[in-house]
Length: 311
Length: 318
Image (tube, rainbow over all chains, first blue to last red; front, side):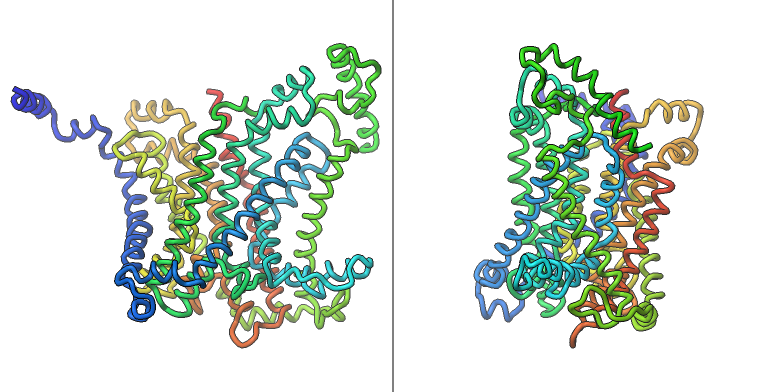
């Protein structure tokens, strides 16, 4: 019975042409517009990624001899070698504080600078400036400005605040500074735009009901802003996590700022160990996605819905 | 004039204060007038928290301007050591950088790469975002997620396997390879920004054109094209800025003769056997920033990147 029923439906469908049946399911010639993009993503993203993953399972003989583990030798090496394991920690130690700083400092500033006042345009323009500076000029500028003989130390020592010049470059602080300079404006602009999406009458209503600023911030602004904060954190974290030029230029790439990107590049460009380079690169992506996933999971518990639109 | 504005501000606020007054009544003559003002209406006044905010902004700007100005001064100076300013000024570093690093060629490569990436990613990305915005089809969610990945994953993560593939195909150190690797984050970026932009365009316009007998090609060229221009320009500028500034991906596949400006500055800073003289690098870095600034200023005269966002939020009212 069931077999004949299935055959029956097939029969009725068969009267329509194949083209119509496909169109019914949303497949027609208009989808050809997607073809270039699909071909692009398969050829330049999916295929290289699959190829890279395949490479990680073909370790060089050296790696197998030293670390064992057969086809998994690259992974054994990644987790067994203090050189690579430590750099996971070094990367997290830079990216998480930088992203947290950028987000946490942007909140009060964005709230303070929300009302219109003279010079607001100028400040916004100045804050966008780092985007044009680029990482390389930022690095060069930090080396000159915050170096041992730079203006910063010069001023502080002439004012008698310091006896010894501060060491702000070629170490952890240098990279952190460069991450803040490039990431903070971005975080500030994003949080400002999320903040402008919160209806100001909510705040006014709370004020009229007698809520103090702390109550209004904790119970009105913060809950409405939290999903935006999570998004901003993810975006600045992603930028900070893949830091490569500044870790090399203003950091200490063989010591305290030996981040995963630097290690991956060493294997790729200096030791020509492509399988190990791909392994580090893929582990780096996984580590980043793990943090992003945790934040997204946390975000899913936060308030979702309208924030009242632009005030 | 400005002084008058400052003077008049408290007077403008005065009526609102009296309006709020009766509501919060019991407190007699308000001890802290600032607290009774409606937020958003008041001028930035001298509250302690305001000063903290300004100090934060000031510290950031000091660093920012200090960095920019010290690079500019360094690029024009000779022998700048523990002093406020260099001993002499010269423009020689620029001509030296220009000839030593063949900056003319480097800038040409940068422009060729940037313009090709912008053109290709618009050509590939916009039709795809049109389909994603207008159509339902099997596996749409999976396809959307796939386009999102290259934007979230660190460039080095997909850059290293991609560069290995490029070298395997014999494309290593060619301009084509530089263009191809830069497309990987750019096309998804165009798709992600353009899809919401297209979603808020009223489909009735296209349907009317189709009813009147326009073919797909005509709908795209005559109807959608003009409406999409502001969004496409905004996306194009963002892609342009990202591509000119993109270091990691270009660095992995470029070589002598195919380096973009950022990469050649980086190579000058880290060149083996002691890096180049510092002012030489400063001169190149400043050229880069000047180029970026000029591009942005010209671009912003024609388009406003916030159009992408503004159009979308305006569409919410429909």
